[in-house]
Every structure is written in structure tokens, then in C-alpha cells.
Length: 453
Image (cartoon, rainbow, N blue to C red; front, side):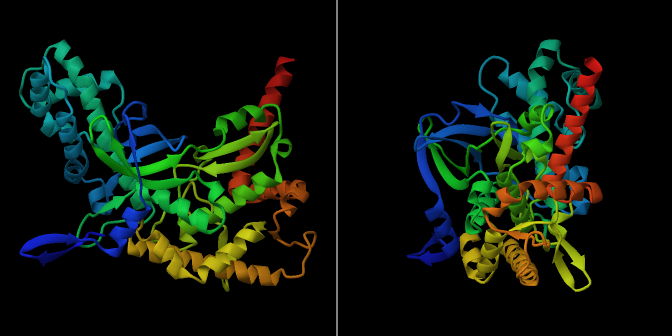
């Protein structure tokens, strides 16, 4: 929220709002010798690897993306204005001085008009870009530069396209989860802060360990004196899904499972439903492995979340899995098992919406906080009704709510039931989706081994 303006002693003075003061107070501030010493990614996905208090972190500079609607999302003029022009200007500003820099700028400016029409086109290879650059010079009626100049243009042109296309992809993803422009026009959404919001929500529900911790930060680069605001992410604990896929060649899903993994995936799914996270595919989780067994997980890339959708709609996209169903009497709990501790935490937090509003006030817009509270309260009501309905039941009688120590006690039955659910209702849970895939890999590997023997 922007600060208000007052006139004091004849001068305009910015008076910070409560939200501004909260944001400043919650923001980590520290200095590094050189922010660009260890950098990964590219363009809008640049990640700086930093050290803070002896721990290794990933820092991503603040990313603001425009919210668009169905009409402007694929409009070429809008794409040029909102995505291409900023990327093009940034590239010009960052061309280093030296021989050939003036000519490079001139060549880029010469093809700017036809180049901006390529913003939404899928172009990737150097060969494609060389042809496109030559065609663009022909289109503007100017002679094509010599090969040396074309090769100097190539990485800059490709980087401009990649940066502008990345912004468009993020805008599309925001649009897909219901974050659209208002009638008054496009507005900026801070995507980076959604990682922070996810981390805070997980902490409030007692499952902070299930997502890589994120905080807002202001980093000062001692080398230049520049200050950068953004998202500071702790390094996630675990291995990528490819490590589990390798294990699956020798071990079935039943041999790799644990109560801790089952509990973690169910809790993460519920957290994602409340946060309206829509991008939790298998590669957006890190897997903790010990002696060939998956013991836990951590979610990463948590920025595609916090739409204005309701609880049921939040779980209906390709990578989201809803834990709730629409019944004749309203929403019901659809997952076969639920962690009792997390259910209690959801019910208790739903009684204090003012706490959620206070904690999220510097990272989400008011309308997004309202939607978050609505999903939280709805989930709490469904969980409370389901718990009351199952009161007095044993596990054998179909009780779904499990205490912490019961996940390991019943892990074999839970696994069998969840994998069966995947057969009856494909990808009903994160767990069933992932473990069914591991079993497919296992069967395929064993079949190949038999052929070779």
C-alpha cells in the first residue's frame, strides 16, 4: 500500500502507513560483499546465492508483474507495452561500453518495431534467431549487418525475448489462478512476496517445515552501495524427484514409503488448498531420503498462490489436488486421511482472522487476504464437522483423523488405500499421484531387467 502524503511546513512529506511500517520492521537487512558473486538462472529468474548468519540462502530480487485480463493477455500491442519495452530498455541500459557498443545499440533500435511483435512467439535456437534478425532488417528496409555484428546481437536479442516472455508467462499464471486486472486497468502484483506468504501461513498452521522458509529482505551490495529488496529463501532440505525415480527402479513404492512421508504430503496438500497453490507438481517438492525410504518433503517455488478463488476452486487446476468435494449438503472432506494436529490448528486459527490479516498485511493485497480467510474458515468448518462425525471410531472402523504416532503405526494400510484411491480416482492426492508414478517406473525397470537377463 502506498504511503499517504501530508503537507508539513510547506513541503510534501510521505507519511508511512501501518502496512509500510510493518513491512519495514519484518524485513531482514544485511550487507554482502558482492551480490553478483554467485548467480544462477537468467533474466527474470536470476537467483543470487548468498550467505547470511552462516547459512546459505537464495535471494531473488523483487518481481512485480502486471495483472491482465483475457483481452490484453494475448494482445500484441499490450505484450509490447507491458513485457517487451521494459526488457528492451533494460538490455540497452546494460550494454557495456567499449568498441562496438554504439553499433550494437543502433542495430537493436533499428529492429525494435518488428522485434516487439515477436514477444509471444516460441523462438529458442540461435539458428531461428539469426533468421528472424535478418528478416527484421529486411522488414524495416535496412541492410543486414555483417556476420560479426549479427553474432553480437544474438545473445542480447535472445535475452530480451526470454525476459519479456517470462513476464508474460507469469502474468498468464496469475490469470490462471484468478488474479486479473480491475476495471480501472492493469496493476502490479508482487509475485516474490507470495513465497513469503506461504511460509508464514505454514508457520501459523504448525507445518513450517513443509515449505522452504522465505522472508522479505533488503540486501546491500557493498561493492556498489546499491540496495535490493526481494525474497530470501532458505535452501530446501532434500533431493529432487529424480533421486526418487532412480530408487524406484529397484524398490516399489511400498518399500520406499514411511508414515512421515504420508503425513507430510497430506498436510502439504491441505496447506496448498488453503493458500490456493496451483503449481505443486512433483518437481516442486524436495524429498528427504534415508536408507532408501522417503521420510519427508519440502515444497519449493511457492509463488503461484493466493488467488481470490474459493476453497473448492483452488484445487481444480492441473497441478493442484483438492482435498474437498461438493456434496448435497455442501463441502465435504474427500481425502482418505487427515492429520489431527493440523486439523486442530486450522480450526483454532480460523477463530482468529484478525491474526491472519495482521500477519499477511505487508505481503498480500486486502482482497487476497479476504479470500485466504474465507478458504481457511471454510476448511475449518468442514474439518470440524468431519471430526465430530468420526468421534469414537477406530482406524479399522474408518477413522480418517490420525494422531502423529499413528501414521507410522498404520503406514502399510494407509499406503495401500491411497494407491488404490489413485487407481479408482486418478491423482486424488499428491501422495497417490507421486507413488503411482513411482510404481510405473518400478514395473518398467523390472520388465527391462527381465528382458536383459
